[in-house]
Image 1 (tube, rainbow, N blue to C red):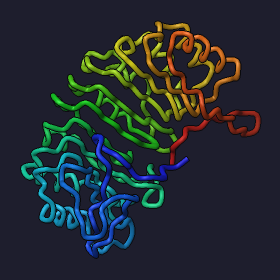
Image 2: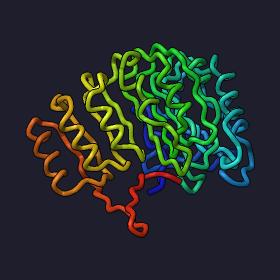
Image 3: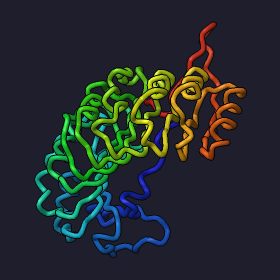
Length: 326
């Protein structure tokens, strides 16, 4: 599976493509017509340029945006593709956003790297150090990024951030540790796509220890540690992790989750307080699927068991795979 569609919503607002230099834009049915721009606060603005042979740089497009739109009313901003993201990182984009902070006093949501596979495969998107964006925008409530190459995240303290998402086909352990070492007292939702070691994933369960302890995440209610080749090991660690007690939902989907992980969850601390357990795209036996559904379903937990996968066979070895890698 690849990332095949752009964000449609951010901060509860529909995404609107800021027109290109030639006036063109991608619009969903029912959105404003050519030449019409919506109220700045009514949409999540997506600023993007052509992924290849762009007529302007992302920074130039953003400069047009800041002089065309009353940015004091902007609440959500999506950074789409920048030219040649497979070889050019987001450093200058981060710098432009940091420099524009005084003109975006109401910004509450920011996503960096909203690209599909047609723009750049997820594991080829070059990122950079993104923590300066959280430092520059203390009012942010939602922050997300896609792409793990050269992604860097230093520990930060942020008082208002409620949602943090990092989507990758392979997440470096330093990023995991940087997030784990951050103080995020308002964070309610954490979503990490850990990915495959074939595409740069090198974190192990010990790197997740601060997240699993939950000390710096007192308000966390929705935890997703997914798209991982160590999904069973994560499940084993979660079976006794303090962070689970306060959760409403747990997402272990898109990875290599199998019977070992399910056995650990069922034999560990109670999960009956959860509203939902999501393990779609899994490698569970039919018997274990039935057991999970019966045990947790009886307690009123919604269990997503869709997308049962069959391992690839390499000679006499079986190979499980994550949903999103390259």
